[in-house]
Image (cartoon, rainbow, N blue to C red):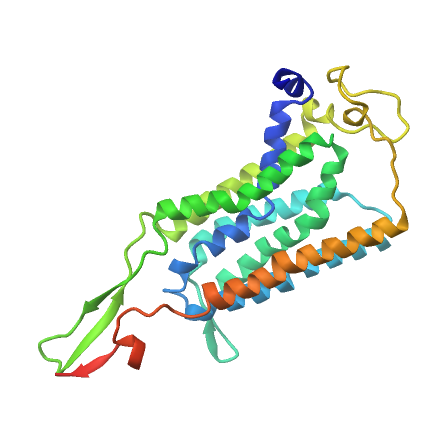
Amino acid sequence: MLNQKLSNRRLPVDLLALMFGLGAWVGINGIYVQLPLLVNTSPEGWSLPAHMVVLVQIANLGPILYTLYIKYSSWVCDKLIIYLLLAAAALATFILAFVYQETSIVFGSEHSTALLSLMFVTAIVGCTSSVLFMPYMRNYREIYLVTYLIGEGLSGFIPSVVALTQGVGGNPTCLNTTTLESPHVEFMPHYPEPRFSCQAFFIFTGTILFLCYLSFLGLNNMSMAIGERVKPPGSMETLPTDTRAPPSYKTDSGWTMSKQLYSYLLVMIALVCFLAVAVADSFRNFYGYGCQPCICSWELVVGPKTEISK
């Protein structure tokens, strides 16, 4: 049974599809898992996640603009748009590795403009992938859509594992920083140093995105991948796979759905996206990143950097 299943697919094409799916959200997820380190150096402090969530929601303009583009444009080439998005995400992440600490004054306050603006680029890629990357996989046999979705799932798993290896999010300790000349006892939080810097992590993420770009390039140009594309509806030509494969694995049968089913699926997709993105991001921002954890028992009463008279 396993041999029959493997004979109906091409493992190199599976790898290309997996890497293509990985590029959907790995950029923005990579930035999120660095928050325990970024909040310690950014001028926004623990309000940085709130700024990031707002920008991710604004990045949903990407799918809207793409929808308007395919509706009113007479020339549509999804392949070129995906090339542009993946290249922009890889380039933005590489640049982020060297400028993420750069700040500027906006409306009289200091902000992490380099970090937030480059993060916005990766957010556009993630948001647009739902209406561009996944539908593009309809050009290939349906078994490769599962591989793509596995890759999209790994876009959150891989950055998290690397971040855990890096050692982000370690619990701070409260150190006594009182000097001999000071008449007060002073305590300051001390965060453990990570095994490698945010710069190294962003370079790693940029490399992953560049590999995703190369994978999509191979998906469109390798003869093996081209041979796994779905034939036009009504075509009697079969794909170069096992002749015992079910008909659904060979051709696009041209199946259509009713308007009622189409409307029902649109409502369900909207509900799932609302619960998975909007509500999840709000709870994550409020409970996960919304406030700085208390460092010392002193701070539970009088706040950070407590001074107590001897």
